[in-house]
Length: 285
Image (tube, one colour):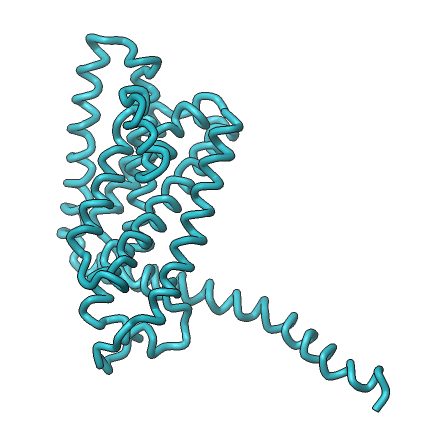
């Protein structure tokens, strides 16, 4: 057989693969949008409950805003941070968390899903397992966090085109860090058993420290915030991106977000090899 004849099947396979890729991506996007639509429809089924839950989260966040407002009414600057910076810190933190919990709401439940054998439901379907797990749940109260973030931005943020782009980028970085840090700490359940309590505490530590200016932490505290618990890469965004673009910090924040995304995905699928079925035969639509 000639060399030309031997290469034809390979070329044909490459051609088919190139045509299949856009279609596969399109199907996944449709799947994601349908899942989000169904989650929202389920939340809106009881509209009064939905409005009250989201509204209470907004009120809860406003209480903290009033606290910081009273503080800055007496002290104009906190180690270089002004009221505007703290307000935008809360907008980024609440918005990033809200995006995670509203659109990828199962992230915080992965440890429980693993420990109780509920992964069988997702393994039984021809969908990317981690993506399917993440988008299968919506936190109704988190919608209040997103609305709160947009409200704070509307009051204190830079509404120019560049300001809107920077705020959107800050929310994206914060959301990715929240999502994949949560995935990583929940994946400990593959090796340690039910780590739901530990995962919850680690996630709460991340969430809590994103609502305090990084300038109040010194030495070892700041090191922890930019390494073990990467809250600093979220809480410093109002200074290092929104007030003025600090390229070294922005590059570091983007790198951390990407590393967490890659590490979380890799850790989940590595752990999946150790998963023991819970013999749950029910299927999700």
